[in-house]
Image (cartoon, rainbow over all chains, first blue to last red; front, side, top):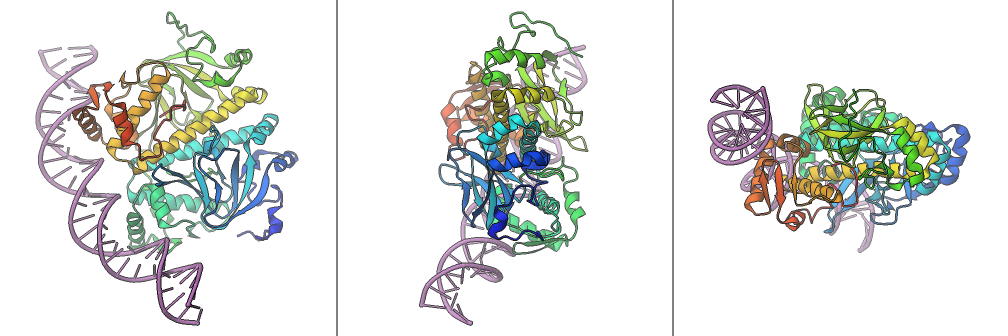
Length: 255
Length: 255
DNA sequence: CGTACAGTTGAGGAGATTCAATCATCGTGG
DNA sequence: CCACGATGATTGAATCTCCTCAACTGTACG
């Protein structure tokens, strides 16, 4: 993890410029002069325990949230209470962008583990963005990437087999861990199999079967939620004939 | 390149305020005082013949486009030249939003029939949006809706059966035709079965079979590309247990 | 009028789901 | 500290949906 930043309460109050994720998060395109203004509108460091919600579907929309540590899943509930996972979000990624057009949140967001988030009130952000063109531009980009990512997911689900979907998710996670200077080949899945299956449109059993199949082929080792990828290229090979799946290296949003 | 010929009643040179789609398109939230400024940056009325492209994947990104008449499909090509349809766009809807974050278009857009589009140069739009908060707000909303729509499509493809997917597409088209004050129960599909199948992740044969199955159940009548919906509620019923699929009534983007 | 192309229909097969049982893991309370 | 229950994960067998391959029909257009 981070060497300098402990998970104590002191780090929660730190500004965006001290945040190790500032390269990934909102302020990336904002000059350090302007970060001060940004910090004024962002509420730092709210802690969510496992299962706690950042926001709830149908609640009045006010803010997006940046994930500082931990992991978030977003999901919708049908009228019968059936859950549909719409994305997983890791540190440096922003949740709630899909609700910007709405009066109410279009999905719920809950913590997959102990998670720290920063609140970004959208109304204030919009007025600030009017004054800071680079911020406006960056926010447009963030949303556009979200569209991109969602499109790629759509393509993944519309055409690809179970093995390709899982491979794509593993690669996406690998890329996103790497971006945070963590190991891209050895990491712990923040989510249970059921959420993976739900997200990828597969039965839990299928997820499990594919994992063991990959393991038998020597591509990975899976033990519970701990994953070791032995052959990154073999996973990439499975998606070669596709138009790039889930997250590209430079993308900084969900999955 | 640009062929700008007036077509009788609805001149291509007409401004956004004369355009019958202004309620759907970009200017919806802009005061009539400001529409003038908007018109200055928008290039009106480029005509595309069937098969012609509005923009091509990997070309330098410059503009989004609003569909004025006709129909557009967006698609990506894999390295092997395999096509993946990512959306269908009808008059009043905006294409290219997913490329705003990129230097190059992330997909191609081609006309499914003779189509008229208005070009929206993004750089100019961004600087104008800085001066017009309502425009900025509206553009944020447009993009957010695009995310929304893409998410809903993802859910559709991840969980639903062939019948549910087709039903969802039919309802989406119905809703979008209605919004333009056209019949929501009797319309002509702008796209061939192959594009429908490609878009929904189904084989052409499956699309065909589902259409005839619906027809045998008395829900619709299909003759080539002409569709008549006899029982709108029956279609809705198929999706009732889902979290609202494809396009919601107030959404104004793709599908 | 014949050639493409779009659309329909049928038979067979592959992949994923469902149902069911078993095993593993973890937090909790006795 | 261990036992227990609960939840998560794995594995097997049967079923089903949709895809593939193939043949055929309809339609538009030269």
